[in-house]
Length: 169
Picture 1 (cartoon, one colour):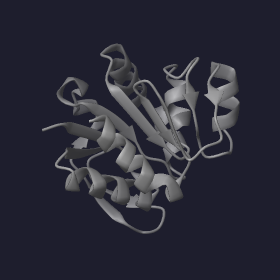
Picture 2 (picture 1 turned 60 degrees about the vertical axis):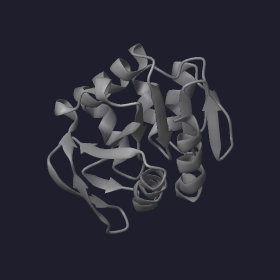
Picture 3 (picture 1 turned 45 degrees about the vertical axis):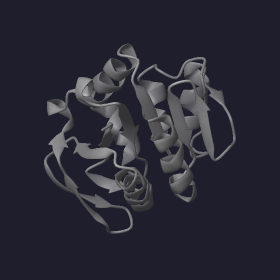
Picture 4 (picture 1 turned 180 degrees about the vertical axis):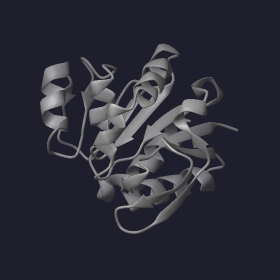
């Protein structure tokens, strides 16, 4: 059975992006694990609560088939945690599938793994500037796949994002 590792902000992840995507993966029989920078529970920007299964620093990307970053107002702060950047880089080195939705493709760009790749993002800052700085080819579409990378532009794309991930696993 494939395994997916979600990374969410402890405060301010986007509820639909986690819950809708996770439900689609769970329904498809994909094992899902939710990670964040701290243990406990995470609070979504719409008030939803998610149980954090593991801290990012304790997650071994070798144990997963895909790394999925969830957006929301707290997501850009994930790029400030070395353990998040490190796991993104390690997933890339191991040729793992990597997915990000909403503003979280910014974290992938900051980690340097999207250079020369086609990707989408929530059309705002700091993502657009980071895409330009890192040489990411910004495509204004709801879901974009370039090889192992799947990106989506926001909560309204969460179900399509989840389906695209399932197709790739």
